[in-house]
Image (cartoon, rainbow, N blue to C red; front, side, top):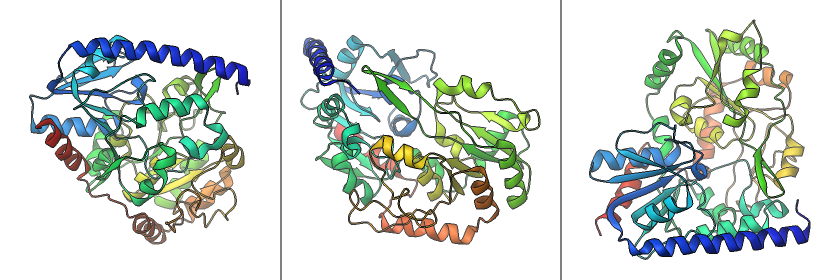
Length: 420
C-alpha cells in the first residue's frame, strides 16, 4: 500500500500522463471514422485471440468479410487469423486506430485518458460474470483511488456491457462502477461449451498425442496480481496440490486413464516447468501459453480451480468441477471479501453474499477442499445426479442465459450499429 503522500503524488503523475493521452486522441480526430473498422483488445494487450472478443469477431467476419479488425497486442508474436490486423499496443497506435474505428470491443479497461468520439460504440465484454472473487468497489480498501479513476473513466465511455444473468445486473454497478445499459445475451466465449463437446476433446487429444478415449482434467488456479509502488506483478504461492494422488483418485472414481492439463498464468509457467515427478510426468500437459482457454475447457472431463470464475462456466456445461482452495481465509482477507460466503458457511452449503447479490438465493454447487485429503474425498464421493441438480438450481436462481447463441446476439447488436 502507498503512504498517503506517495499515493497522491502517483495519482498526480497518472493525471498528467492521462492529459497527454487525451491530447494524442484529440490530435487523431483529424482523421475520419471508418464505418467498417472495429478495434479490439483483451487483457490490456496481454491477451491474444481469445476470450469473448474472439467469438464475437469470428461471427462478425463470417457475416461480413468487409469488416476491418484491428487488434492491440503487447506481444507481436501472437497468432491471429489473416483477416485481423495486429498492431503494437502503444499510445499512438491506440489513439489513431481507436479514434478511427466505429466500434470498440474490450474485455478489460481502457488506459486512463482514453477518450471516445461521438457516434462511436464501445462494447465491453468483461472477462467474468458470475464469480467468486470481488472486484471493483466490492473490494473495499483493496480498491485503490487510482483503480477507481481508471474504472470510472472507462465505464463512462461504455455503451453496453455483455452479461448473462441477473447476478451481473445486481453486482456490476459496484464491481464495474457502471450505471449504463446491459446487453443480456449470454457469454460469447461459452458458446463452445454448449452442445456436443466430443469434438473439442478429440481435438485436444490429437494436439497432444494422447488416446482419444483418455480423460483429461484441467487444473487452472486463479490469476493473482499484487501491486508495490504502483507496479503490478503476478504472484502465486507454490501450489500444494498432489498431482499423483489426484490422478489416482480420478481413475478410481471415474475409470479410464487420466491426464492433467495445467494452466497457470503465463508469467508463472516457468515455475510449473520446474515441477518434476517421474511417475506422472507424461500425464502432465502444460496449457499455460494458449490464448483461448475455452476451447481447451470444452474438451475437458473435469476441472479444478481455487477461485476462478471459469468454475461456473464449466459447471453450466455439465463438467464436474472441484474447488481446491488451501488459503480461503487469507485470500478472502486479501480481496476484501468474496461473492460467496465460503469463509463463514459450512463448506458443503456455501451461499451467495447477500450484500452484493441481495435478490438472489443460491448455493454453490461445487465441492470444496482445503487440502489433498479433502479433494480426494470429494472426488471419490462425487454424485453426478446431485451435482447436476445443484447446478440446475444455480442457473435458475441467477436467471442465467446459457444457450450457445451469445455470439450471434452480440453480433446482431453490433451490426445494427455498424449499419447506422
